[in-house]
Length: 526
Image (cartoon, rainbow, N blue to C red):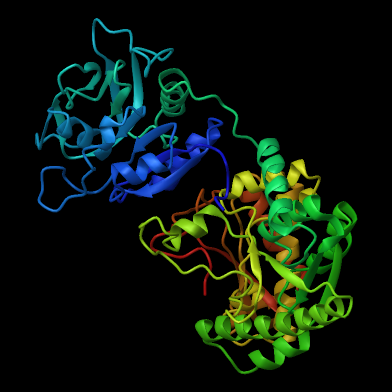
């Protein structure tokens, strides 16, 4: 069964950095979108019954041998299509225009001006004659295909935008999906709503109504199991399923001892109170600490935590399966909080690059005989948050910053011990409390707090020298976690946090700020 009945706008990916971002911007315009590879045939694409097509950017040159191409039949299907950067050049070349290496490259902010005698057409309607756009190209369209009107140019690019209203084919050399393009979202909305005539009806309320109906159709009267982590994805997935089938759902929460302060209580009290879901908590703190004893290698820690989670969850699910089987009502379904980026990055059947293998619920073994329920499979994180709010989940859970599956285990550089966990918890709680108090939660994407447990630095506290641990603050801004920059937090805030941590957290005598972007540094330290 397809994950949604919505007809999509298909984003054809030519190896772009921004394919996911294009899909997100389309959704922000109230239109459902999906990503497909450039190898898709016209027949395969037609089967998907799209309402529109967007051709993404890419790193190649259209005239080079082996560069990504487009099935020539796609532009003949009559589906409204917008080409962006490389996609714009592919469209131009395929339809008889000319693309050349002019020697005049454009990268970054570039002034784009409407061509004299045009009013900007459908694509650039209600935009100023001159606007700032984000460029990233070494090739240019030097001649538009026959029947196309040139809408805009830059100093170095004679054809920066074109349109053929009759065929509903459009293109821009710049990247409207990035926020640096001043009127980028307007360009996308003009294409979607004016040129393609697509209504803006993709929203959280519609998603909830559709997914509730689909979950009921899939599950019927069957029992459903869900592993809650305390994170946004599993919380919203469980809430959606509970909205659909009520008490048929049972949630399992594993306390592995690597949580931040207050997280267990948040799930057990706030979440249960807001949803009414049945929750089984498994206290496995001792088990995990024992397994992690003496281990400092981060990859080994990850594997141990994943393994122990599986075993703990297996034991819990076996007990629940036995309980319901005795009542003649076995558990047949398992809820997972799989998101759309997980599907795309795992290859997802789209032919896109396999960036990482996605394994939910700690990587459950194949011999667990469950049918999966994945109500968030078509959604991005911001959409998941919107649905969580619509379902009445506590803001503390919905707005929660991303937190790694292995928890604090990979925010301690060195062996994980109870003492070190308590130290890190205390410092982390101060940081989170102060971020909220200063109204900075929405300005950063997350702020990992790291304990350099294997490092000691000399300090002066009271009347004597100390050899304490440094705490690292890692505030970052990001949209997708693929790239990130460190967030410029106010000096006064940093000073207050440093004072509090060194005064209130025993064994810590130094607080440092990580000012590295990603790349080259990752967001997490381990």
